[in-house]
Image 1: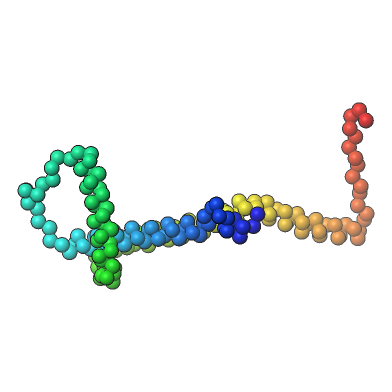
Image 2: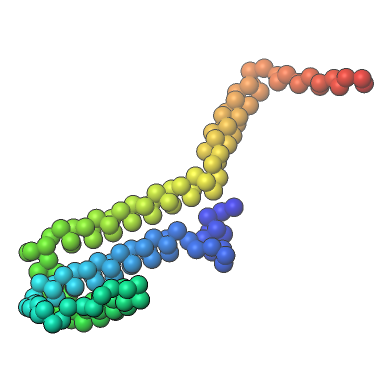
Length: 161
């Protein structure tokens, strides 16, 4: 089966699309982390004793998780106009976050190259060996036909016949 047929298969997703999707998720999550970090570093926070949260229950923990996720997405979208300020601030103050995102993107890219290579090997694992045998067979037949006649193979006898 050729690679083109495998990539255009309606039942599966190509490795290229999977890797691009992973890289987009890493970029979006990285941008959200950088935007949230930038906003939290530039806001003044004061804590009152009256603003303490009530006792935690499972329902309130799920509610806090959902509200934090919504706040993460809202912050990421609100900071899009400040893209260059956020990146510049992270280059000056928190280079580790930007470096981590770039390293994860690179890891996803190399993971994709590795998967593509593996797909090529798994598509036809013995293609290289067959090609080598064909080339050797072609070379040996032409030289052996010139030098000496080929031997005929003996037929195996079946017991009882």
